[in-house]
Image (cartoon, helix red, strand yellow):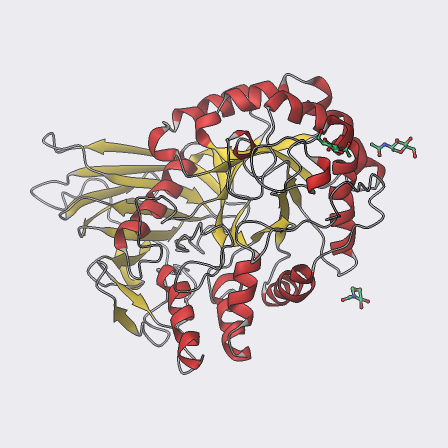
Length: 508
Ligand SMILES: *[C@@H]1O[C@H](CO)[C@@H](O)[C@H](O)[C@H]1NC(C)=O
Ligand SMILES: *[C@@H]1O[C@H](CO)[C@@H](O)[C@H](O)[C@H]1NC(C)=O
Ligand SMILES: *[C@@H]1O[C@H](CO)[C@@H](O)[C@H](O)[C@H]1NC(C)=O
C-alpha cells in the first residue's frame, strides 16, 4: 500500500495551485495533462507564504501558469497617472475603485465526505496533518468552511441513513436514530482535527442526500421518490437529531441546506441518495417543520440555505420558496451548485440578488470530471480544470456570490470511492487571500484592443484590513498587456502570460 500514499497526496495537491516557491519550492511532477502538480509526500510539502504586501505604493503579484509557475512572487510600483508607461498601450485596462462596495465574503471550503475521510485517514499520521494543514491552516489555503453530509452520499462505500429499518418497519419518533460508523470513524475525527489546525472556527453546514427508505414514497434511499408528507415533521426532527448528535462531539453547525439537489429525486431511475422536492413542497416543509423544529431546540442561529442545486433553477426556485410567508422568515441564503453554469448566464444570480438582496448566495458544491464524456476522472496537472474552477469562481464573485465550497476534500487516484460509480476529480483553486469579511469593490474593465474580446476574468476585493486584492485569470492563448489603475494610488502596466492565474495585492 505504501506507494499509494504519495499518489493520493498528489491528487490533493494537484489542485492546490498555490504553494510558495520561497517556502521550499514546488516539487513538480508532470503527468502529461497540460501542466505540473506539486507533490507533497512524507519528505516534503510546500507551504503557502501569506500574501501580504507591506510597502505603500507597491503591489505584490503572485503568479501561477500553465507553463509551470507556481505562486511566483514579484513586486511592482504604482506611478502617477500622468506617466506614459508603455508607448504601445495596453490591451486591457482595469480600474479599481475602492470606495464602492458590494457583497461580503462568507468563506471558502470543501466537503467532509466519507470518501475524503477514508482517503485522508488512510495516510500516515504526519501526512494526514499535512493535508489538513494545506486546507485549513494559515500556511495553507485558510479554508473557513466545511460541508458535512447528513448520512451517506454517493461518495460513501454503501448507501445508508441514520435510521435504516427492515422493510415494513417505521420509526416516527426516531427512537432508533444513531450516527453511523462513518461519522464516528471518519467525519468527526477529521472535522475535530481541522478545527484544531484552523485559526478561526470553521463554518460547517450540513446537507442531507437520501432520507430513510421508510419515509419515502418509493421505499428506497435513492431513485425517483419524495418524502411522504406524513414524514415531514419526522424529517425535520431528524435534522435536529443530527445537529444534537454532532454537538455531543463539540461540533456545532453554522448552517444547513434543505436538501442536496432536490431535483435529483425527481429523475427516473436516479442512481444515488436523493429526495425529490418541488420548491413549493420544500417551502411548506421549511415553514411548518424545519424552521419551527430548529427554533424549538434553540438552534435558530443555524442558517437555512434553500435550493442547493444548479444555477439553472434561478431565480424561479427562490421565488417559489419565498412566496411562502412562513418559509420566508426562516431562510437566510441560497446554496448553488456549479455543474450547469456553462449553460446558465450569470445574470440569473443578479436577478436573484435584485429580488432578494437580504439572501446571501453561496456556492455549496463544485467538482470536475463528473460528466459521462469525461472518461478520465482524475487528470493530474490539468490546467484546463484549474482555469475552469478559477474563472467560474471569479465570475460568480462578480455576480453577488459570497463564497465557494468544493466537493470532496480528497479522493483516490480513481476519483473515489463512490458506491454509485460517479467518480470525479477534486481540484482546488481557492485563494487564501480572501478572508471572511472581505468586500467586493468596483472594478471597471476597458478593452483597448478592438480585434478580440479577451477571455480575461477579473474581480477585486478589499480585505478587512484594507488590503486590496485583484484576481485575474487569463484564458487567452497568448500574453495580454494590462494596465492596472487604482484611483487613489496611480497605475502600472504588466504583461500577463497566456493561461495564467494571478493574485495582485496592495495596501490601500
Ligand atoms: C411512506 O409511503 C410509502 C409508500 O406509500 C409507505 O410504504 C410507507 O409506509 C410510508 N411511510 C410512512 C412513515 O408513512
Ligand atoms: C467539549 O468541550 C468542552 C469545553 O471546551 C470540554 O470540556 C469537553 O471535554 C469537550 N468534549 C469532547 C467530547 O471533546
Ligand atoms: C415545538 O414545541 C412545542 C411545545 O413543546 C410543541 O407543541 C410543538 O409541536 C413543537 N414544534 C415542532 C415543529 O417541533
